[in-house]
Image (tube, rainbow, N blue to C red; front, side, top):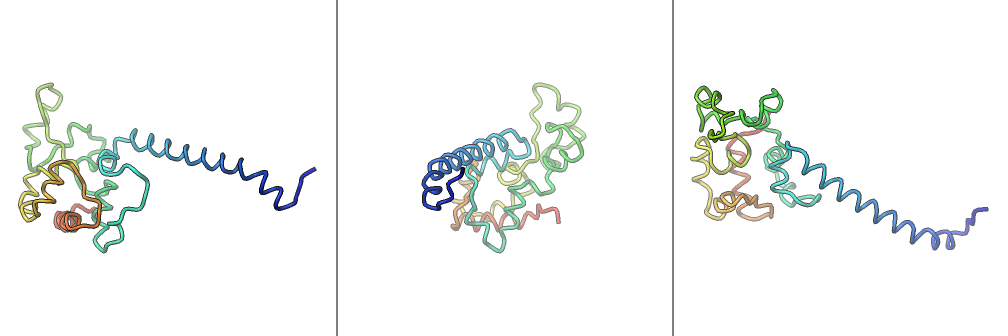
Length: 171
């Protein structure tokens, strides 16, 4: 029969429960990492996030805008085109590429379209150029090097203001 003595039961289960816990943790890490890397919708998220943890900037008042950008909850062509079933290569930036001129050429090997995604809007788009000019050099350098400043510092505060000014949210 079963031994119901608390000390003996705990002593017998402790090594096994540690093993189960460790295996569950390993399974979580591998499945989290694999599922996010295999999801094309998470390209931007994957470029800025490598561990499943609460980021320090998410407790700020303006954090909603960064969270929406991270989750691809915005009105950029990379996301709206996905909802409409438009091929990724045709989700071009309406400010940097004139759609009527570019779309017939998108399937040619020499045609380099500018896809309107998060990094394009943050770094290169002519529509956000004036807002980018207001950023300090540290923030500009971080964006230029595809680094998303996630620590609660001045660069992050400037980035939050910049993203808020762009009004990319779906609301």
